[in-house]
Image (cartoon, rainbow, N blue to C red; front, side, top):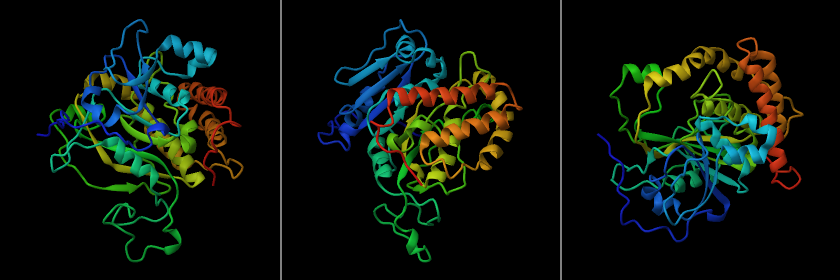
Length: 363
C-alpha cells in the first residue's frame, strides 16, 4: 500500500527554479482543492487553468495562487473559428494553455495527482525534478547503461563515445505515477486492484527511433523547443475516440524531436495518482484507438521528415499531410484530425508570431 505525502508544515520555497520562466497548465472540471497539498512546491508559479465542460460553473482555486482561467467561451472568443481544433469534454483541452502561455517552460498536471513520497518518506517536489531534467542534456543517440549520466553519482560508462557525451537539448520530461497506474481499459478490467508501489530512482533518455506512450498527467516541456507540436488532437465530445490525446501528441513530438536532434526523458519525477477512472467508460472511449493504434504506431515508426523541415511548425505541417495521406483510409476521422493539426499551427502562430517567438529547435 502506498500513500501520498503529507506536505503540512513544509514551507513555500522562497527561491524556486525558473519562477518567471515557467507556467503550470491544469485542465479541470472541478474545484482545485488538490493544490493545497502542492502549495509548498507550486504556489510561487503562475497557473493557467483550462476549464472544461460547463463554462458557467464556478471553479474554486485556493487562495494565494496566481492564475488565469479560461473556459470554452474564452477559447471561442480568442481563437474564433479556429477554436474547433481544441477538444471539448476531454483533458486534451489543456493544450490551449500551452498556446496562450508566454513562458519558455510548461509543467502540466491533472487535478487527481497528489504529492508522492520517495522511499525515505520525503515529499517529492515533482516540478523541481522536471526542471532538472529539462536543464540537463539528453543522450538519444547512444544508450548509457547507468541511465542519465548527468545526474549526481552517475557518469558515462566505459565504451560510451566521447564524441556523443555533450548530448543534445532536452525538449520533454515525462514523469511517472505511484498508486494508480496509467493503464488502458482492458488492463484495468483484468487488474482492478493493481497499484504501483515501485519507486525506480532513474531518469533515462528515450533512444532515437523509439516511440513511447506519453501520459499528460505529469509532464513538462520546453515550449520554445517543441511547443507547437504539443497538440493533443481532437478527442472527447463529438469525436469517435478519447484517452489517446496525450499519446497522439507523444508520437508526434517524438518523431519531430528525433528529426530536429532533440531529447525526450522519462522516469523521475513521480506523482501520486489518486483516482482510478471507470474502466467501462474508458473502454467506450478507447476501443477504436485500441484497434487503430496497430496501424498508427507503424505509421509513426516509418515517418521520414524532409531536410527542408527545420522548424517544429514545418515538421508538424509535413506530418499533418502524411496523416491525411496515410491514415485517412483507416477512418475519415484522420482526415479531420489532419485538418485540425493545420488549424492548430495557424492558431499557434497567430498567438505566437514567429518573428517575436523564440527560435525553435533545429537540426
